[in-house]
Length: 496
Image (cartoon, rainbow, N blue to C red):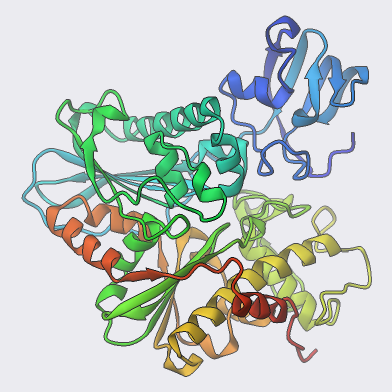
C-alpha cells in the first residue's frame, strides 16, 4: 500500500501473536498492547493515519491473505494471520503546546490542586500550590483517546458499548494520573478540577454518552458537582475531592462555561461572542445579562484530521502559508504535513491567487505547497464544510439575539488552535465575517484557566453563575441554521 502521509517510522517493533489477537484488527491489537496509534476516523479506513510496516502474514477485512515483508498497510484494515513483526510510526509529540500561562488564583488553601482541561485533541494539566495560589507545574499531551476517533461523535459511538466506555474511561484516567506524576506525587493532590466538553466529562466519569449522540441529545448529567476523587482515580490523597465543571447541554460543555468564566465574558457590559473552534464548534453570544449558546458539527479538518497531508502541530508541519504561497514549517525542518493554522492560511492564499474560486473549485486535483505537502480538491471541500458550520452558527446566534456585526464588541477565540489561527485568513475564507477584523482576541486555553479558577470555592461559585447565564439553542432541524449553512458553503470573491 502506498504511504500517503510521508510517515517517519521509529525503530520500535511490536510483536503480535495470531493466536492471541486474530479476532482483532491490527489497530485493535496494538491498542490492547497500550500503543498509541493515531486513528482520527476511529478505525474506519478513511483518515489513512494508522499505517504501520508489517512483516508476516495478514488477512484483509475481505478475507484475502497475503505475506508482507516490511510493506505499509493501514492497521485498521487487516487482521493478523500469523505471528507478526510491526514497525510503528514515529511517536507524536508527548508534550503538546499549552496555549496559556496559568493564572494566579486566590490562596489560602492546603496542599496541592490539580486543574485539568480534557480537550478532544489535547489534555492539559496544571498543578497549583493552593496556599499561595500559584501554578507550580504544567504538562500536556495529545489525548490518548485519539486512536479511537478524532471527534466526539466517534468517541460516542465507541463508548456506546459498555466495554468501549470502560476502555475510554481507563485511558483518560490513566493519562491524567501520568501527567500528574510527571509534575508531582499524586498523593499530595488535595483537590482536582476538570473542565471538558460534555462527552469527555461523561466518559471520564464512566457515564454512557450514547444519549448525546441521538435526538433529543440528552446527557445523563450536566455535572457541576464534587465527588470523592477515589471514585475515579487512584494514587491521589485519600481525602482528595474532584469537581467537574458544569455543562449547558450535551454539546456545550464545561469547557465553554469555564472559558466564559476565565475570559470574564460573563461580566461583560457589552456583547461578546465566545467561540471554541474545534471538532465541535461551540459558541456563546451575550453579556452579563445572559448568553445564548449553540454547537455546530465542524468536524476535525481544522485540527489536521481528514486532510490528505494534515496532522497535529509538530515538527515538520506547515503552520503558516503566506499570500505568495511560501510556507513556514515548525521545527525548522523539511515540510512533511500541514496543521490547522496552515490549512486555513493555505486555502486563503489559494483563493487570493485565483487557484480556488468562490465555489471551492480548483483547476487541478492537487496543489503542491512543497515537494511533499499538497492541498487537494477533497481538502478544500472539507474546509468548506467546517467553516460553513461555524459561520452558520455565528449567523444564527446573531439573528436569534437580534444583533448585527456592529453590535458585537469583542470576539473571543478559545482553544490552542485559536492561538495560532490568523484572523485575516479566517476572514478571507469566510470562517469569520470581515467585520470582525480588529475585534478578535485569542484567549488561549481558557478552559484550563477556568478549571484552575475552580480550584477555589470562590471560583466555583462564579463558575456556577456563568453557567446559569447560558441558554442553549439546538441547531439540528432549525431552518434558519440550515439556510445559513448553505449560504456559508461558498467562499466570497477575493481580489487577485
